[in-house]
Length: 286
View (cartoon, helix red, strand yellow):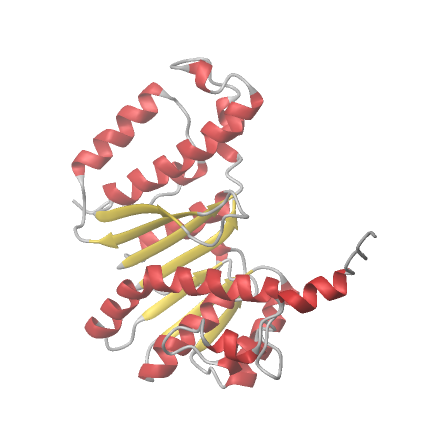
């Protein structure tokens, strides 16, 4: 006798998490009201399998940047945080609750160019009473960045939008930078015109896309280092469904790093590309 095939509704029901199971996955300082306002948790406290995966992804990212934010709230009376390309502001709002709301100081600037998402985030912030959150409806490079920023992050900002966030963060001398790049197509396009150096590495379209994405992030990491940042590159656990799961963390420890600048120059001599980022970096301090 053949077994009856389960309906999609039955599969989803079995995959849904109970309120108790959801509570067991929350980080310290993380509450249900914020996750409910974001639409990740039901009014009764449960969550679908997809929402639970998103909560775990958020939690892992927050764990990665927690040392940086703890450092800022220990050293600065009013830390300024920027969430560039904020999207639905899942991360920004969770960070706001855990640090700004908890300490009663600091502020968060969420930058987002899509009007519907701007309205959504503003509504959630009002609902939660997050009055230290400012939402700017603008492109990253056109937003009004404060002269001084203490923490800047850009999660899945497409292509050169990540570079806009990086350039603006460097100009604002951010103490800490966190980037999860996405859709690095610019350098792949530039490589198509390059026939110098080890061109066999990018001769075929597939290799060009893969190598271009890797080269883009190497350039970003070296640029950060050249501005005096200690850089760590790692993988975001729990993001296995996405190929865009590379996390670049930078902590400013000096004003300038001549060795990293030389490395970047040598790399670009071997592979002569000039991506947007290199044309928009702020003047270096020496």
